[in-house]
Structures are given as structure tokens and as C-alpha cells.
Amino acid sequence: MPSDGVADEFVSRGTLGDRDGEALIAVRRQRIPAIQSRTTLPRSLLPPAWLVRVEQLPPPYQRAAVEALADQHFDELVLLSEADAARLGVLFARSPTKAVAVATRALRRQGPWLGAFLRGFLSASPDYAAVMRYAASAWRGAGFKADALPKLDARDRRRLLEELAGLGDSNAFDMLERELVSIKGDPHALALGASGFRRAGIGCVTVLATHEDRQPAADVAVGLVEGLCAVRKYGDLDTALAAVNPRTVPVEVVLAFLMTAKRVREHLPAYGGLVSRLEAAMRVRKRIDVADIIPLLR
Amino acid sequence: MHTVAIDTIPVAEVLALFIGEPSVGQRHIGLAYRPRRAAPLRFLHLAWHKNLRDDATLGSRYRGVMVAAVPRALHETIVAHCKRSAKADLDPQHLEYGLGYPRATIRRDGSTDVMIVENASGLTCATFVLAIFKLAGRELVDTVSWKDRDGDVEWKANVVAFLTESLPEASERVVKLRADKDLVRVRPEDVAGAATASAHPVGFDVATAAGDSILSEL
Image 1 (tube, rainbow over the protein chains, first blue to last red):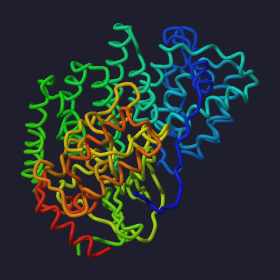
Image 2: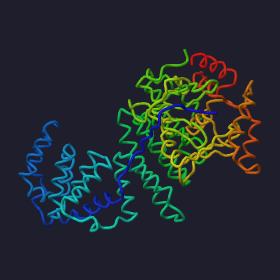
Image 3: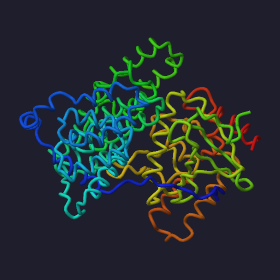
Image 4: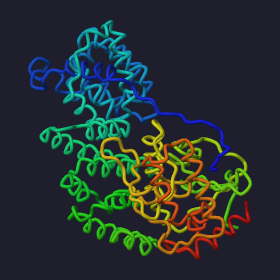
């Protein structure tokens, strides 16, 4: 009988629960509209000079500088415009521990820029699980009780996941895929979910495709095709294929789209065009495997 | 040489097969893949009925087989499908061990992403590997050209007897398993041999010739 004789080990990947997501949504809800910021905080129209100076430093020195200046200029931080707060978040992504401390202090003061700060942080460090931990930690650190968190509705959760996935967080993309295929009996919700999933997936692939490791982008490409096929949203899948640019996306990732979509290509007018664009891009790059690969796709 | 020591599989290679003879006359095959660039290999294989494994280590009796014939640029796609199976098909265990691959349809469930095997009583370790390639868009072997060899009829009879010994005679699974006994067997070494060939899908003669060479190296 079949037998393996190998050691027993399987490590499953853990994910954070919804409560942490609620913390981030909660702090984001404290943002005030940009127009209100400009009306009440005119001095924030110009970024503080120290923030500009820190941005001009070479990256290895930015962390120390921003950490030193954050305490010194904390009152100014609370007066930052949303745009400047987002710039600050980008800098603080180099120093997550300090970012939590600053976010905690700001939450105690109900700082209106905190959502923008976290958005900037996310754009520089798009890691869903980590940012959820930071947000939850700041929430608790500011003395708020867990049961005081606003409830996270499905729409907010989906938008948060779409935003994170679009920034290159493949964990968030996986969660979006699970949410998409679980939508039952609501055509409007399914249409919304599929289009958001498609946009987030293309964004995620675009970010991950710049990495040296092709695997994460290929995983997301396969997930995007499988997810849209599972809910039979071939129009969204066709739009996604049309958006893939083989001149900038690595061959391995374009192939992940095409090989997985091949079985439903009769529903996808954009399939043939993407194959042709891939072939042209491979010839430009003088890839010697073009003759092996292109026939597999037709 | 068609095989390599597992620990000599280059870090740059994200996909290989592994094959071994864990007991006399009993071969076993699975997929070795790197979930991320330069990460340690993981070993995905159907060990037995409802016992899919995604292991971090492998016994010393196994050898690696490089997947030479599928273009290298496709390996990430195949690895993506390995990862999806490791996520969806392990918990709960649901993949049935069985026969009948030549007429099977392989797909993933739209809601749960689990691998669905239709028109066949299940998969073997060898046909599980074929199923992963199929999900990634590649048929590794041309089963139309396959033939049974000495020992295959007895092997299939033993498998069916073992799998059905505690089941009611008239159960649907017993009926399906017995019906699939008449279909050809694709052996582990056939799949390993096909992976080393130069054009796909690989026919019986090419795959079995390469498979015999691989067996001689175990």
C-alpha cells in the first residue's frame, strides 16, 4: 500500500481576527474631511520644515531623525494636514515601534490626522497583519476598551481589504478572495465584490511584480483568475487580462494569468490579445523560450 | 543521471518532483516546491486515502527529479497551485485514494477551493501530481497511449480490496472503485519519467523508458 515514511509537520499560516481590523477602521473614522483641516488649520498647508528636512535625508538616517523629532514636535504632529500626516506615516514605516507610540498619543488626543498617518504607513509597509497589530496596540495603549470599538460592517471590511490588497498585501488579497466566493444570492453585492476584487488584485500584482521573487505575484495572479472564475465573473476577468502589461509584468506572472485562465478562454476576448502582447514582449527581451511557451497558450 | 539528491536541488529551482521506494516494491511520488524564493522546499504528496501531506522534511530514501520539460517560466504557476492545495485540501482531509484517472475531470470547488475529482474513484500519489499539473494548465502524460504492465492488474485488485474491506458491498464507492479497475495505471516512475522528457504530453513509451532509468537510481 502507498506509504510515505516522512516526518509529520505542517505549519498553518495564522491570521489576525476581525477585532484588530475594527481597531484600524475605528481610528480611520476619526479623520476629518480635508476641507475642514484646511479651514481650521491653515498653517498645515505647508509641511513643517522639519518634516521636509527629514525627507531629504538619506533613508538610513531618516529613522533616527524622525524618532528624535517626533517627541520634540508632537504638538505640531497633531496639527498636520492629512497629506503631511501621510508623508509622516511613510517615514514612520521605518520605525514601527515609534509609530505605535505616536499613534497611541494621538489617539488619546483624538488626533484627526491619524487615519492619514496610518494610510501613509501602509503605503510604505503594506503588511496587513503587521498594521492590524500596530493599530490594535495603539487602540489599547490609548486606554480604549475592546468592547468600545465600533462594529466593522462587511462593506468597511471589504474596502479595507481592497485598499490593503491594492498596496501589495497578499494576505488581504487571500481574504478578499474568500469573501468574494462566499457571497451568496445577492447579484449586486457580487458585482461590487468582483469589481473591487479585480481592482485590488491588479493593484496587488502590479506592486508584487516589482519584487525579485516572482512567486507572490504569480500566487495573486492565479488567485485572481480562480476567484473570478469561481463566481463566473468573466467580464471582470476579461478586464483584468486586458490590464496586464507584459512589458512591465514578468513573464512568469503573465503566464500565471494565462495558464489558469486558458480553460475558460472562450469567455475572454482579451485572452488572445494578451498572448500576442506577451509574445511581442518576449521577443523584445530576446527570450529564447518564446517558442516553447507561446504554443502552450493557444 | 535522471535524479538528484534532495538537498542538492538548486535554490533557484522552485519546483521538482520527489520519488522513492519507502518499502520493497512500493514507490511513492510527490511535488517538491518552494513557497517563496529561496525558501526551504516543502513536499506535497497524497500519502493515502484522505491523507494529503505538505511536509517540511523528507526521508532519506527519496530522490529529486527536475521538471525539465515544462518551461521554467511556468513553474511559479504550478507552485501557486501546490500552495492552493496545501491551503484548501489538507483540512479537512477529503481527497480519496482511488483509480480511474484517465477519465477523470479535475477542477476546484468555486466556494471552498478544494480539489474536485469527477468521473473517477479518486487519485493515487502519481495521479495527484498529474492533477496539480492539469490544474495549472498542463497535461503531463497522454493517458490515451497508456498500457497495463505485469503486476498492474494485481496492484489494482489489492488497492480495491484494501479500500473496500470495511465498506458495504453495494455502496457507491465500492461500485466506482471496482469499475475503475479496468482503466490503466499510471505508475509513480512513469510520472517522474514524463517530467524529464522534452515534449508534453508524454506518451507511454517515452515516459516508461525514462521511468525505468529513474527506478535504477533509487
